[in-house]
Length: 379
Ligand SMILES: Cc1ncc(COP(=O)(O)O)c(C=O)c1O
Image 1 (cartoon, rainbow, N blue to C red):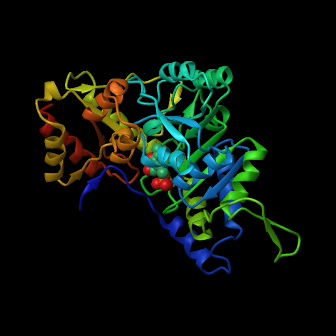
Image 2: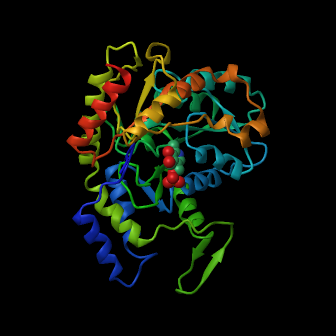
Image 3: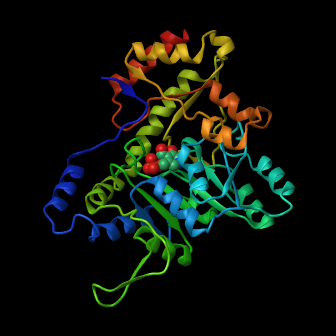
């Protein structure tokens, strides 16, 4: 068995919760949908929550709510999962890739401002900011840009459920107009597949609920409905909601465990020229969806590929988050790629590996991972 970078944590209460719903009449469109949404709202200080079948659907719904269309430009960082960008394409709009900052690995607000200043025709309608790895981005600066340039902010918060900024666990909806979450098994809590849209705006909330179910608005009689706009079937079944309701009760426990693992890695890699460490900021709590380690390959004197293969020999399956999306053949062919504009993303990509970090990583496994790190990096 491989030790991978992330994995779900399932206990008896999760199993019981799912078993219970299997005995009920409604496996989907039942009462657990609202119940899970209520738990999310309470836990994340959000006025509204709409659960959907995955994080990518949450992002696409957000693009549709904000009416992104041909002619619109949406800012996005290259270091993210494909769906943050694919959403923009699916809406018919165009992405503008904004380089990351090497201080937090999230979109650099200063580079976004340069792009906004150049955009005389005001085509940039929004920015999708990714709280990479669970570390909140520079939201105060993004909010200032939103006000100055009248753009919308989306927080692709798929890594950062359970993070907080200035002790506010509801920071995501405080700063962004709309927020996407993912409950894929590698995330802090899981529903198998699943996602959610958070917002404090009642209009966005109403649109999210309509788009989730084909664009349908139900009328008083149980069989009557009208469709005024094109929607999707992005519903999250009650089976998955049952798992989510049970999992979210342990969110803090999961984050505490991830934080403990991160501290052990921090001790192992700090003050060593072989690694690049970013300074932790007291005003943030990182949910540690990922533990990205930046390698000083010149000092380590090995290639990143070789290192990943060496770990694999010891049954540790590292990951790389992410191959810059704008270097993917689809985007390169469509928009070209000027490496001079993405120096930080490319530098980050060439050095970054993600180490195992998840609730069920036990002490024996963690000791094993640290032992192999010491061996491979000669520390
Ligand atoms: C930053 C980011 N955005 C969006 C997604 C998409 O979420 P999902 O896999 O639930 O569709 C992911 C999932 O890995 C992600 O990491």
